Length: 444
Image 1 (cartoon, rainbow, N blue to C red):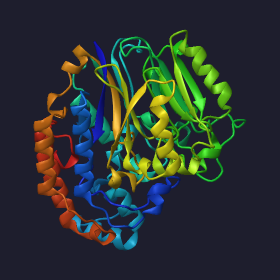
Image 2 (image 1 turned 180 degrees about the vertical axis):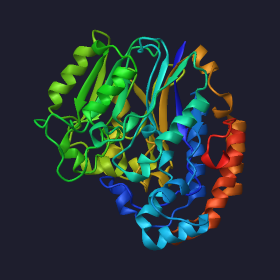
Image 3 (image 1 turned 90 degrees about the vertical axis):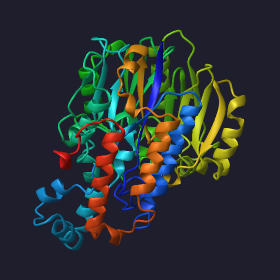
Image 4 (image 1 turned 30 degrees about the vertical axis):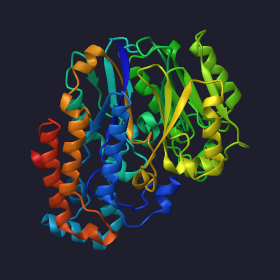
């Protein structure tokens, strides 16, 4: 038996709206607004429990320790922790907000994962994303690696790679630009890597307004490290024109699961040819490609609603369900499309809506919050059991959030050293609840 588990990033205590992600319109539009870390974390936990209740294997990934005092000290701020924070707040607030970001909540960016069915050595492979395009994310990958190694901690089943070198030519944004299509989770699948630009092939077009964060060269390096079969691996370029309209990752314009690919008509460069490549590589097994036309859903409505940043799940009974944010109900074109989607010739039978507004306002939908990990029964048994969600774990973690999180956080609150102390106290307790050991620098 093989299945796909979802590991969602738990929203951290310093969740705030700093507008750090250029090219992510929701992030930029809500810059400097007050956030609600408690509501954000509870919304995420409720989504995790809902998927568990649907019969899915659901896990949780711990947030990173923020503010990142180590990075602030590397940037030249000195003194006590309180002095470091105050100096950064007054002298370089853009650096302080980067070191306060709770962006690790979007675990689709945490890593690229390849299942044992696809890897030559028969192991599950993890590569943390280097996320070099944004400072607030580029400081995450070392902690991401420690966290993943504490959750998937049996080296007879799991192989952990270091992040790619931190250089723009190897910009890697993780699973947000990667999906896997297959007939069965336990059989070799088609690994689909989508990149925004090539660092070295100047003949390939690039976006002009916003950055292309994923490079072809990074995707190729991960495919080699994960020992993937070239015959079952494909590299396709994202349409640069939609990147310039706010489609900063492929998972804002396309999503796949099992033998279904749901994508916008403008998702890929030279889309007819790209889809033909996918069909040819997939072989003779049934493959469903649902291409949403521009006159059905505009790029603007797709970005506002995060229609494609939804999760498609194969439920235990074999039916597929789509997990969408409530914002999809508020955009007329998107709501109309989803209402008639089950009647199309494709496997999605159910659409479920969930409130993840705190995440959405900062630029991440349901799919951003989760890292997909394809596991056999033996591999699942080797996963740290304290990191799997059930009714009791949801209750424990919700109580933990209620005890430690603030219900409002403004820009001025970031100069309060008490927030650092509260965050570290909370995370120290969390590592015990999740059986992670001393994974944070402040614990060492």
